[in-house]
Image 1 (spheres, protein in one colour):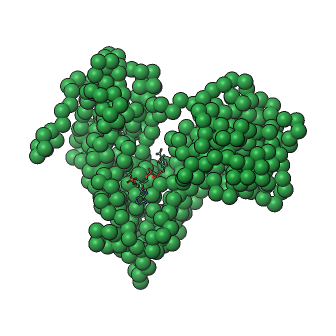
Image 2 (image 1 turned 120 degrees about the vertical axis):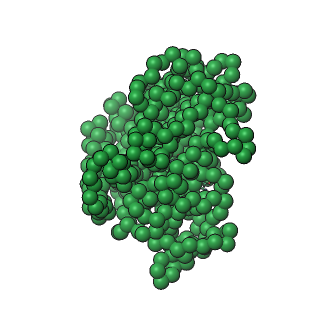
Length: 460
Ligand code: NDP
């Protein structure tokens, strides 16, 4: 290692790269990090964090309505998009600064600019020449995928631009039925934008439990989002008054902004990985083993660039496991089972473990416990939002295989449920936990009746 400029060179200062660089540097290793955009990566700069601020901002529409129901006189309300953007950008700059300082405090050296591998040890730094490293970590994340062949695609934005729109549109069409499409649909709808989601599938959020998928689509429609299923764009055209969206079902509509949220792709283009002989999957993801090691024995990759579970906390754990293994003599691999996630729709979704369909497929017979209800906060003022709570339990072992919640703060609720599921909790153990009253989450531990779906034609 002494033969190289750095013991470790990290390409990409997002969640995974920064954690790995800091932990490695704390061992006394000489660590370099290159970042071509801003330190913090997708999560901090153009993902989770600014998205959550936008969710908070957009939720006030409902809060004002609820407040009236609870006896408050709420006068005229008005949202100032420009002011919000200034405040949001200030906070993002502050957080990015913390990331920079954390790297520096750990002793890592930060380079601004693109890094490219010339071979397995030599890294070319844009405008700064070459450096060599004993070990290399690729943590470049992902970027929005666009259907480049679609006529008029250049008129559409991605989530990257949605954080900086010069003004709030009156009408937006969002293509896609995944996390990003639905979260932004909730945001724009809450901010008063006429919002349409267009998704090719029969229901949104493929991969989630079917009851959750159906429920969130109903709740979003109830809140005012128009959801068009089973169709997709065939073209976009500029008109005098906006953008004309044409779909493959023959329908069309006009909007001021079109946002595509059709998935993200690993960002490996232009990194020179081929010069080092690193094997990539067909979608460009770096192929890695359980210890995040690539096909080249001194090159590792963590986070979205490996396209395993594309979530910030997963990237952080993968980065940490890599650094502990390679620089602290503590072999660790991250366990990708039972990783919970939240979708910041309105209401939110929190989910951990298997959907009912996946549980039946993998484990055979399962019991389902399901409760769909209007929380007391809603019933008080005649609000319509309904919560849904579902447990999927393996017959015989009674182990809870999946827990799914659609409710305000479902993200907070599922974090706690995830601990129990990760520990292998059984339904009797779960039920022995006393309820916290009066809460929405108490429903989780009070479901005793097995659920049988209503027969076709019956109303649930
Ligand atoms: P997702 O994979 O969640 O969703 C992509 C959507 O686009 C799906 O509905 C998919 O449909 C649709 N789609 C894909 N290709 C096409 C196509 N060629 N034509 C039409 N529709 C298409 O991706 P996102 O971009 O929403 O998010 C990327 C990832 O980022 C997420 O999977 C998640 O891991 C992460 N993320 C996590 C968040 C969180 O934790 N809260 C928030 C935001 C992102 P189909 O289902 O039919 O394939």
